[in-house]
Length: 441
Ligand SMILES: Cc1cc2nc3c(=O)[nH]c(=O)nc-3n(C[C@H](O)[C@H](O)[C@H](O)COP(=O)(O)OP(=O)(O)OC[C@H]3O[C@@H](n4cnc5c(N)ncnc54)[C@H](O)[C@@H]3O)c2cc1C
Image 1: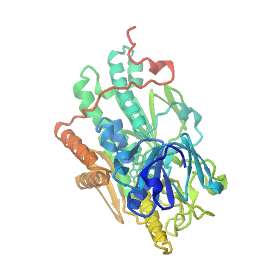
Image 2: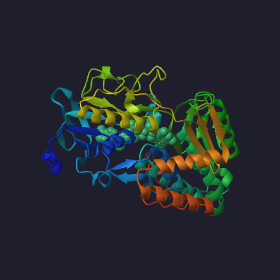
Image 3: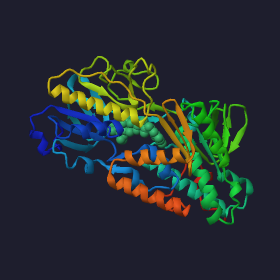
Image 4: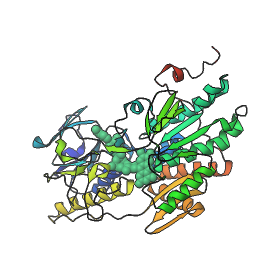
């Protein structure tokens, strides 16, 4: 084991479980193995867990970064049999039960891989170059700085066309992330832009949501899709369906029908693919980089490697294309693998995993949300309250929950997003937008 790992737990007479990735799946395993007869080592390239479902609220200045992030050391500190190292895994050497990372090598008896997803541009290289992404806190802060800079820049631009381009926000992908982001930006136009950028016509700001499907939230029920669409339209979001983005640059994007949209800001929320684990054979995963696992979540052909969360593909009869890539599935995977490891320590046989669908929900704005629960779909205030309750309850720490509640309460009463500091200006590629405040030079 890496020489730096000199933790009291080194002397514990237990097998070593390495968990790579402290997202929803990995953290669940770690928490459930606390106090159990294993030495657990959590490795993550970041030092904190990120509650991704609320990233869009950080991006749109409703929540601070520390409301949705939680340091791993705070979580594992009180767990004597768990250690954490901030390390990026570079390669799995399965025949030697060894991991290579950017801070050295680690040996394992049991390996749990839960590396999550990354943005899928589906081969669209131009978009991969210019579009913004929303997968991490740092990307959320980029989006926040970017739209605030655009507002400031629009205030000092004389050229009407340039001002319009600067205030035209295009979101590609009308899944939950795209829909939630579009709704939040539309509320900012209605509240912040209208009241605090008084010299700007708030109608100059456009929010365009584009999807190649024929409805928004395609994985939801048709009733919820229709509800979400009407909420978006009521907020003034322009929704373009059956449209594909084929390319673009820092000033415009091209659509499949040959038309173009002038914009400085494209946010890509159109798809995900699994993070590949170097060292594992390419034949072990399918096209969207999900690794094929058996009913215990063990990687096919391996009894000591488990794959969880977004990168796992288990073909249950009810889920022939794998479980939904969401927090619920990831947490259930984590819970199940921890349970089986505890059974293994007790010399009991592993149990098969069965996914329990707890429904889907998305929020489009104040008192506007949609929920699918089993065969039932509903929207409006009840859905919005349920969405808030579920999200607050899932946050990792009590402090996170309190901060989110206080911020939401304040926002609800004041109608303001107040976390609007540009503390780390976002600099884009290309001359047009890399000089945000130079209109009168
Ligand atoms: C903007 C957004 C909104 C979402 N909204 C919802 C929602 O409303 N409801 C819902 O159910 N799901 C939602 N999801 C999806 C949900 O967040 C994911 O399905 C879930 O996080 C997957 O959990 P995971 O444990 O597999 O991976 P993650 O939670 O992504 O965790 C992966 C971890 O692995 C680490 N990692 C990656 N590569 C390496 C490496 N090489 N070395 C070390 N560490 C590494 C990462 O730093 C990260 O901490 C959303 C996702 C996003 C991005």
